[in-house]
Amino acid sequence: ESVLARETLNCKEINLFEAALAWANAECLRREIDTTPTNKRSMLGSTIYLIRFPTMTLEEFANSAAQLGILTPQETIDIFLHFTAASKPTLSYPIKARTGLKA
Image (cartoon, rainbow, N blue to C red):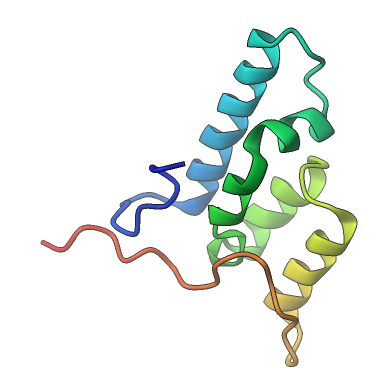
């Protein structure tokens, strides 16, 4: 959680999502439960709301998070609308990119 909350991370959000997903998968295995999308989402808990899906490219989101079943159908629709619609829905996810480390 503390890593995902950091504003100063210098990496792509898709990489953070993939790392969080790998951790959730490992946590499912450690607890000896099926590695279903629902269980992975449960392992992530509220930390999923620290992932800045709207700062991914549309292609990154469409080819990864949108297809994995981790997000609810409504969350997926809302994020797609955020990317494409003039009138953007209110999201539960941060929409501002991380600032990264200052040189």
